[in-house]
Image 1 (tube, one colour):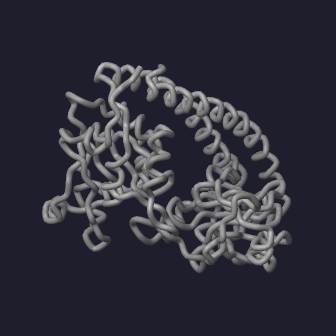
Image 2 (cartoon, rainbow, N blue to C red):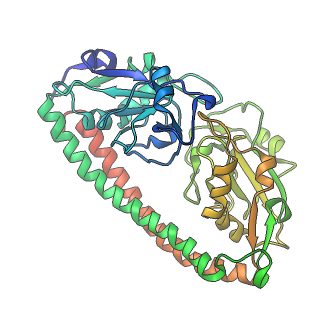
Image 3 (cartoon, rainbow, N blue to C red):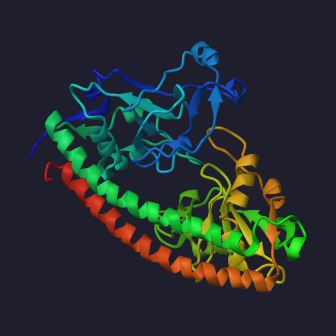
Length: 397
């Protein structure tokens, strides 16, 4: 079925709102404010995440002439990861505004269904166009002007609603798998508390140490601008470290020669831990069966001191709330929250005896097997969902 194809800005000509969020600096914020400041990190790929806790006063919001959000608004992230991801704002108990790196769309309800628009923007056809309009080298972004240049198909409103309903049902299955994985993540924390509890420093042999005390080195990825090649050693980014796993799927590579120069003095070895420190910070994963790879400077590289810590124990420990709490405390910045290496080295972690660490890792390994099964199922559902999206926006659904 052939539908009209229009630039997004043209399609949204009658929209109530098509604007960037607001420029709200740190000095404008107030932890006791009565207005929620929705962050870039709250904008998920197809779903609102609701993870931040930033506020300002209503007086300051009026002074800055902020655009207040309404339930049903489409929020589009103008920075990674991934660039251009969209979700629906579900509402909040507090009046809410958002940051400048989020585009807000309140479509004309007579012309466009918000959920259809969200799904359309998240489809590969739009995502690829967005990538083509991206600017920036260290961290890509898309301006609202360029976002308005991408083209989208415009089916009748009734068809938009039908497509949105089909994709919503398929997405609900993915959400159930993600929820199951999240539940398994809490099981790891439960095992830790069952074995070690909330013990005070030094009690029952559970010491409190700095990360620098149990690692031989904490550094980060290359600060040099990589010379990318068409094929070679995979080069990974913050987005490749998620949920305790390193995802080696990437379209960026460096040569063997450059790899040797960058990592000759501090090779990446099995059991080392990667930890994201910029943007989506606080994600950790152990290096498993070794695959040669390189990574950007926004990812920290922890080399365990095997005489003091079991590497897999450290990898799991870095994913637990006791570490995430410290990451949240030390992260600086709004658009790109950052943890510097000096602060990371000073993170305080509980350190059981080596035998206890091994017992813990054996129990966690059983949980990891269950998680691997759920991840495989989720991957299949993601493939199905992508196929449905592709067919939907070609008029073949």
